[in-house]
Image (tube, rainbow, N blue to C red; front, side):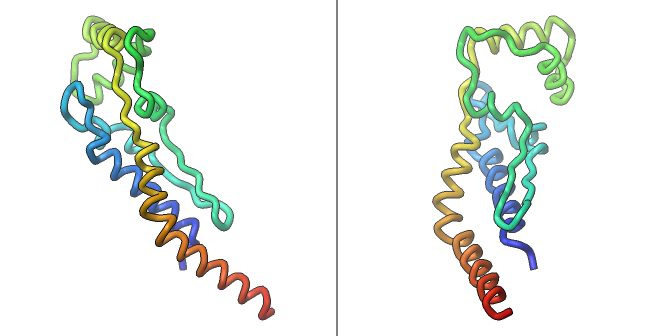
Length: 149
């Protein structure tokens, strides 16, 4: 039998991925979902430790996706943009990378609240239903075992 924390960990990963695959993952500037096939998407994992502790791990880049980047901010690191270009099959020469860095600095990047949306879904869909029931059942089982020994 899976521990409750393992079930919750799997659900958390599923929810965060579904948010990235959905409307929240769409980059408004280009009109396509740039998160569903991203390094960030592939980096998502959750670790169930202890009885009801779940740790969510994502690439640090999630901060920039979540909060965006304001217009006029300093340019992003060229090496990160070059890696992105290579993954997307775009030229990664200095002129292309520089142009993308400059455009990001000039225009900014709109936020895509992946984590806020995922946490809202978890609150609405999971805590009031499935997770609460699972935790209650496990707690009851632990107490029954404790008092019957």
